Length: 341
Image (cartoon, rainbow, N blue to C red):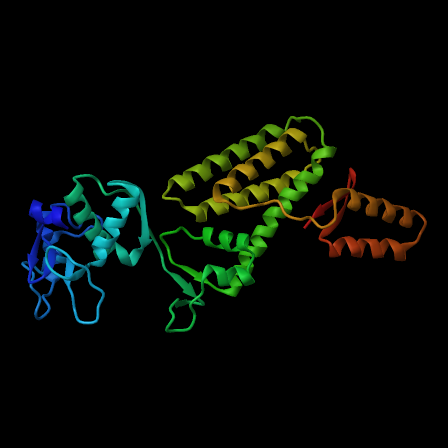
């Protein structure tokens, strides 16, 4: 604050200190508002001691009963804008890489942070700004007054943390997101489908042939999905589109597994891409599969023996047991296959 006063960017007035907003020529750039437009809509409250309605407080003179500290301008406390700039400079330096916050803070709070920090330090305050959309609960704004306030700690008591993350990623961070049981269930089901695709690929790795004549088109599809994923993330972290790319990869994996010829090399490329894309998003796709592959194979062999012996009751019981564990049996031209689903 003293530096700003010395530079002429701030002034004292009856124990308060105000930032002289017009002294910072770039004021309004973050929120894309001109200073003249802001001036036209500004109002001076009765009793204010500003030179200009746009000027904002850096130091506020003490009031009875409020916390106060000693300063060159008398007892008082810092304004909330200068608090953030002071903490950022102390712990992160004069220029920080990424500054985030809610969209409602873009103006005036973040605009004021930029003005006072850059006027003081003669350095760019933040290289990138990320303003997130609001979180709604069942289509209502989350607030303590409405009694629908929910913390992350509370949410993960009822929802798998990975499902919660996957749900949050389904909306680009600048857009509002609605938290509801229905949407959480949709996210859980979607994540399960992707995980099942990964598990089914892993299951087929030990029973596949070398590259075939039709495999090149599948490798090209994988390359296209990866390229689109990169484009999505380069588009201001558009995780909504990136999650769609993950679903597309899952769909392609399921289609490939239905082919008559399936090669180990292509399956490995599928797994590698699943790992790479999910790693960028911080989503874990490997989970406890319940029955091990060896246990599934053993039960299928036992079921085949029961059918050969015309013990259909036992065969049906094993089929039901596998189905309850999420194992689906398929008769194909190449023989019996199974998958998780």
